[in-house]
Length: 114
Image (cartoon, rainbow, N blue to C red; front, side, top):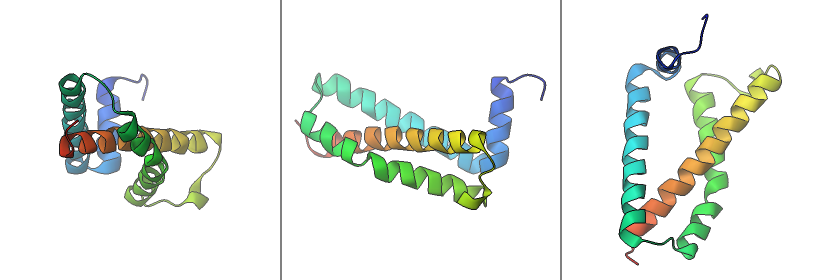
């Protein structure tokens, strides 16, 4: 891998997760993002109550994302080899936390109108 391109990253992620699972996750992320943007435009304001509940769900999303990646890659926490692995798992946790907050806020807003 001489240079890091978008095509290279897609190929690596397809290899890690499998083609079907990877593109399913991309489609789910696009769907949730579109729904979130719809909710923001529709409501024209953020509900702080819904936002608080979304923030409280973030730790669960972080743990779930790390466990998901460990399960898919057939790894365990004992396989962490150094600071790069720890930083990668921290990045996965942060992405899972943010994604869960967006998902929870969007789901609340779609179920309960303002």
